[in-house]
Length: 309
Image (tube, rainbow, N blue to C red; front, side, top):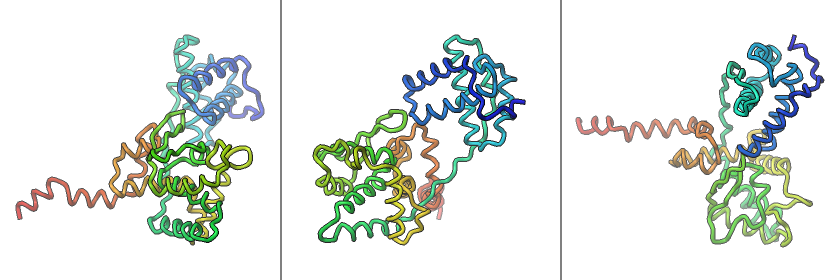
């Protein structure tokens, strides 16, 4: 049985060239990230190890993978099937085979988890701690760095990797925005608040002139792990359960609070760098109260009712 294949089995060597060609296309034509390419390679090699001659397998043979992977989480299964569908679509497009047997693979139903939420009070408490730190005399440069990091996380909704890898001259004094290259190599404009620009200017005075990074650390830049640790320590100091706070939660807070303030969903999609607006729509659940109030106050039938009174 396919489900009993040794997990240490090697992929079929006949498939290796096809997998390499597919991933090369993904990188060159679709700008797939390194993490995506690694995940897809693992998925395809796993399938190849279970099915001899994956590239020439028929729908029935592919269907056996559903049994082999039945214990996997729905999100993992969805990714594996997505890799297979893309792989066989590529083989068909390149005339390596005349059909795409992966079209019959199931599409696991995924329910996107709701983002963790920070209240305005939580955010105020975090910034109160930062304000107290940077008000000390003499000021600790690391507190200035922390201020710049948090202002950019919450003020611009940057991803952790985008933030820590910012070039030293990413922010120009006369330009209230950043140009970020995010997932898939997609570029986007990110507005920068006056507060964030001021915080970055204060920190940049302590960045070595020869550093290529805004947040240097050793021979490279600050790691995502260290950023995570700094954010959680800050949350604890602000009296917030550290388990509730992370760099990504601050990105969620940026999006949630902008929506509460009346931001347009499409504009928010652009600022967050989401390829699909469905990803951005996950934030609308936290704004239900405002939307109900908006309908009650602005719907045309409300005006009609008022005029009839």
